[in-house]
Amino acid sequence: MPELPIIDVRSDTVTHPTRAMREAMLNAEVGDDVYGDDPTVHRLERLAADLLGKEAALFVPTGNFGNQLALFTHCGRGDEVILGDDCHIVWHETGGAAVIAGVQLRTIESDKGVIRAEEVKKRIRDGSDIHWPKTGLICLENAHSNGRVIPLSAMADVAAVARLHGVPVHLDGARVFNAAVHLGCEVREITQYADSVMCCLSKGLAAPVGSILAGTHEFIAKARRNRKLLGGGMRQVGVLAAPGILALTEMVERLPEDHARAQRLAERLAALPGLDVDRSDVHINMVWFDLAPEVDTAKLMATLAAAGIRANPPEDGRMRLVTHWQIDDAALERLITAFATALG
Image 1 (cartoon, helix red, strand yellow):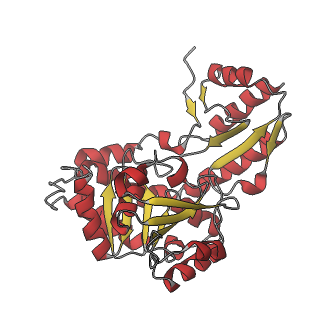
Image 2 (cartoon, one colour):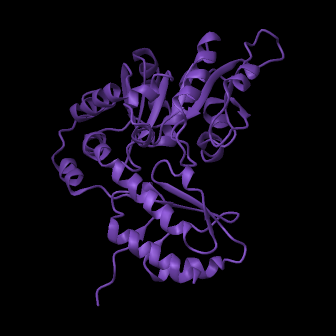
Image 3 (cartoon, helix red, strand yellow):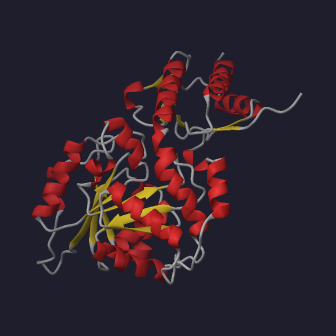
């Protein structure tokens, strides 16, 4: 009997490129991007800038790279960056802000990813006192890495404070297209509240590699130089930009399917014993839930593995499952059956 295909719900970073993406890579017209003559990269960057509502865009290797490049480009050494205490830049980017940009992160307690404008305002410092660092940047994240989408009103309030004080705003928009699906709006309605934005092509949009950093012409020109400084100047990168174009066209259009399956998954898991699923927190393609103390996590993970399912184990009793284009209805049923088996 043939083995069942692996179901991987660890993240949407595990997505394989589609057949159309592989064909686009094979046939991509290329040049040397450091010299600025890769036509496929040019097409990707123009498309991304237009979709994100910015003047210009830059193709970068990863989302982490894009965020850290934004900090490095916006800030001077010793500047202070205001951001939420649970955001990706703080938790999952290896302390890069200290090493690369040489900045200090000043965190604000967030409410499930939302930071309040009045709390931002209290922390802005202009450097006029010789003891103070200068606030060089404010960072927002939407969709948040906890799977929730931040309301546009909350972003607008922070942006208004930032502009009043002349401080730029950077948006970690790794899954900003997912956020737009949830809000029922164009992506540029989200990005209007940021001076720069990073979005990932290699998560739910399924490109094998790459992210986009977008902003003004001046900002992107400076970022392009800084990208080279950081070792991110790639050569015949059109073979990676080509699937990125499909990510921003074909794959964006099917994101609602991932969200719908995440909702179904949350509903079914909530009916199982030992799992506490807050379905109101399922905004995009992520399902988070708490496991009761009596749940045998070793048995759960062994049962999933035996069913050909790859999942990250719980951390402090909390677990995440992520849907993407390779999780179809049949895969969803296998996943739910495996959980039901493990939980009795």
